[in-house]
Image 1: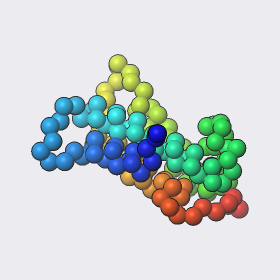
Image 2: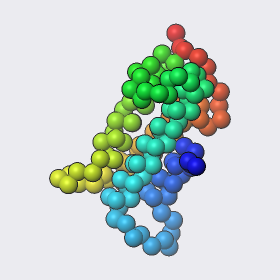
Image 3: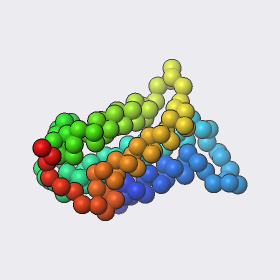
Image 4: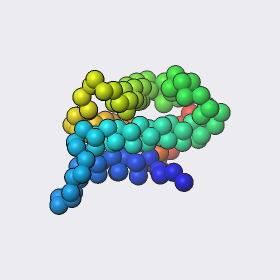
Length: 132
């Protein structure tokens, strides 16, 4: 059983901004990286859901769904999706010689993923076919 993209975004938000009185066992960088992983999972699931509605055969190859998104969801949405997915992918890969991500950077990505969920129609809105 997998969580919905909205649930993953909410969980990422709780990691980045824990409620008052909660003991913080993890360092901010570790929480930010974990939130980035959740956000990338949410974006992947949102893309899968989008393509399942528009054309189900597109969900098989991840590279193709990013390339074709421009013709179905528009240039701006496709650009935002590629940029956000690439940034989150870079943050998700742990490298010993690099500092962990800054929570403020991941909060920006959280807002972007939330906007993309709405643009891709995973928040209950309707989706149209290819754009001219």
